[in-house]
Amino acid sequence: MSGWEEEILTLIERDIQSNRLILPSLPEVAVRVRTLTADERCTPAKLEKEIAKDAAIAARLLKVANSSAMRTSKEVTSLKQAITRLGLNLVRSLVTQLSILQGMQACGDKARLRGFVASGLKVSALCHALADGHDHLDAEQSALAGLLHDIGKLPLRQFLGHYPKVRDNAALCQTIEQRLHPQVGALLLEHWNFPAELVQVAAEHEQVERDPEERPDYVDLVIAANLIHYGTEHGRYAHLNNRLIPALEKCRQDGGERGKRRLELSLALLSA
Image (cartoon, rainbow, N blue to C red; front, side, top):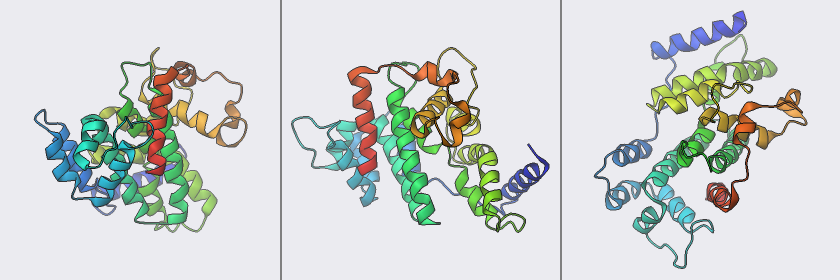
């Protein structure tokens, strides 16, 4: 890391510790739902009561429950039915994702956020599908990892907009953002009390050639999904073209019908 990058990261950490740079809070509906579903006494009725307070998220859960990937012979017409069909774990993941997406889209440069959100959703869907066949990985946690891996870019963009040394230099801002967003993302997810596995995803997903274990972990899923999404023929991963990437080799496999179903389910978020 260069001197100016270390200087900026030090400033960011200092401002966070002194509350001069306030990290965004996790949306309240996500906090409530994650707390409820962590309790073994949680029921669909209790979840319905909390989720119903956010009409937009309730409507989108109904849409996902009625997507082609989830639909059986009967259409879901109530939030409680949707929760029952989706299951508590998937509902927790979807509410977390949807509430964060709502927060992203409600502030900042909307035009710039549009591409960020679209890419995050596609990587999330790919992670969900790639988790198929790896029993030690949770598909819903995988989808959340895909959505949140670049989350550090958002508070970093806000900070750089107020930093005179770089705010008027678009190329320099982009370079700093690319280099520092993993550390800032890890700080943010720790601030949100997310699991250590997701903090690790934020911190390590740019270490594309990492290979710590024989089995893929959540970081490997995100690396593989990014490579599939962006490709290696041109762009940011062009230097990796025709090179063996451990994460991709560990994750790439024919998931069969179950994998296709998972991908369809995750992609339902794109139109939800």
